[in-house]
View: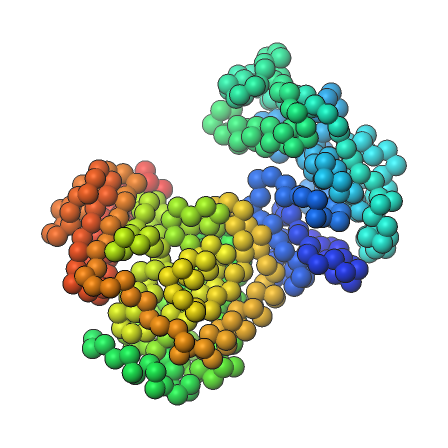
Amino acid sequence: MAKLINQVVDVAVNEGITEVLVHEACPVDMESLHPEAKLIRGAKTFYFDESFVGIAFVGQGITGSVKKTKTYRPGLVQVRFNDNEVDEITIACLYAGHFGIPLLLAHGKPSAFRILKNFLPSLVIAEKNIKQVLRKGLKNPQKSQIATMHGRITVQFHFANPLLAEMHSIFPKVRRIDNCITSISSKDIKEALFSYCSTGLLVAADWLY
Amino acid sequence: MEKDFARVESNKIQDIHLFVITDLEGTSGAVYGGYGLPPSKEGERSQLLMTLELNALIKGARQAGVRHFTVCEAHPFNKKRLIKGLKIVHNLDLLSSCNYLAFVGQHSRAGVIDGVLSHTGSARSILRLRINNIEVGEIGYNAALAGYYCIPTIFVSGDLAATEEAHKLIPNIETVAVSEGLGNHSAICLAPQKVHTLISEGIRRAIERRKTIKPLSFGEPVTFEMTMRYPAQADRMCLISHVIRKDSRTIMFSCKDFLEAYKMFLVVNLATRWWDSRKEAK
């Protein structure tokens, strides 16, 4: 994985990017990491602001089965934003889009981007040509795609069991829809992200199920 | 031990003996593990990164001309990757025979916001430590012990919060921040290659500027005030002579100088160790 990341960092640095933050999903071999990379380790949310030029996904789904990687935890069966199914990649993209940050590179197994494709239908997934795709994206970031979701967002959580839904309904503003489903109305994508992350706390409490 | 600051000032660089306190939790890339937790893959990775940061410090100090090192191993090193020939110790008994003190992989004190794996001594038991009304952590009390022997603490590398803590306590100290906490268990970590360069350059600068850095002293007499997680811990500590109860969780004791206070701190910590070693505390 470090090799793939280093390709991205290399291109970014050569194109004049001053800071490359690598958000780690699985442990990266730090010793091999590009010296100019900064690794975000142990993060519980995403760290974007307007200063970022773009977002790049590298090696998505290549280390395991992507069939089960829709959401953070096994206690969560499905998450929907305004009735559209979302996963981690999609939420990251939507959140980046909130700040006007485009998606410059999508690399990994095509199945990892299945849900994101519903938001970006013309999304092209890079296979071996990481450097060319990223270089092209960095040269013309305004031509790259931005995933966005404007206005209020109703976030719906489908839990693996009723107890989780019951516990979740104790959270502020959360409504129980049925046995295993809850929903919360968020004013924007930022608030929706926080609802998603705070629900992560609940499903992480595995003594509940 | 007689106080002899002139001994430090007159040293030639090749005679300098550098004492290095290593720690794990302020190493770039260490956001889990530490705290004396049982061995794990994550812990082993962090131990390797810590070892490499120590190697970088030794290399930098050697480039500056330092030949003698004593290294305090707070967490196990990766012995295969550790620079050979270092004198490794597990306490500060030999500190008094050295000239300068440096920290590598250091974390910030307990209770600091965005301090990576921040704690003071026992993460399970000590909520707060104050020395003469100044809030301190491990940097503070170890540097003050060195200060008692007139040994300046010249360098700290660790997470950003730890380096800021060092600057507040020790004017002119040279520091290198290798990570920036986003929380207690998350951080933006610099890549090891970069970190090693920064640490090597940092310790070289520290050695060059060593005479501008004064030993840390909190003045005398010395009063320690410790706030424990559980009142029962304070109950036990109060069984020790000269320990006074301040409130349900807080104990305090006063000594004529820092060495005496430090020894007392070690004794008081025995109660903490007993508590931490209980099965239900793990």
